[in-house]
Image (cartoon, rainbow, N blue to C red; front, top):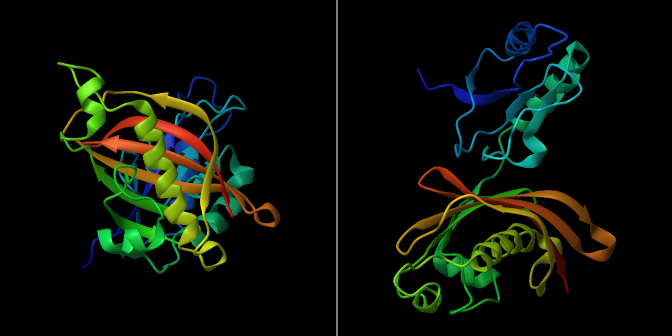
Length: 240
């Protein structure tokens, strides 16, 4: 028998629950006998995650989940049961998932060394989500001066890697193919661990919002190193 697909569950602290959260999740799971519902682990690319909160404060932390923003499904009470069922059904539908070699990355991105920070792509749903990787090679020029004797990847390099993954996410869709990606801004950037020479950045980016009339996209990016969240941020891009 094939392994079941897994959907993650992230509960709030449960300090002020106004309903039986476990019973609600059990009821929702009964609609999906082919799915295994598991407690969410950081850095695992689940197809969707239930965010179960027991009161209006909605304190469940999702910053360490490698799940696209559009597939974080809220459960804040029994009134969310049917909407959550519909969202989860859509999230579990099979999609065309692409992978990109380094050469294919070069065919999409206009960036070139020393300002190319994507090596390959292990998962790509154009216009929705991407998982890319970048090896922080010890011979990167930045390590020589940041810092001598204690090299650390500069945070701006991490931001640029997320932006380039977001470029691939959007430029792999036909509407932005061949355009020039322009970085417009970053917000809510949090760096949680140092990235050292020789470590690989696993970069997860998903589309938050798009303004097609202005060719602007807002994306959420997470960077994991050895399964640990290293950075979490949002970027804004324009395509011209």
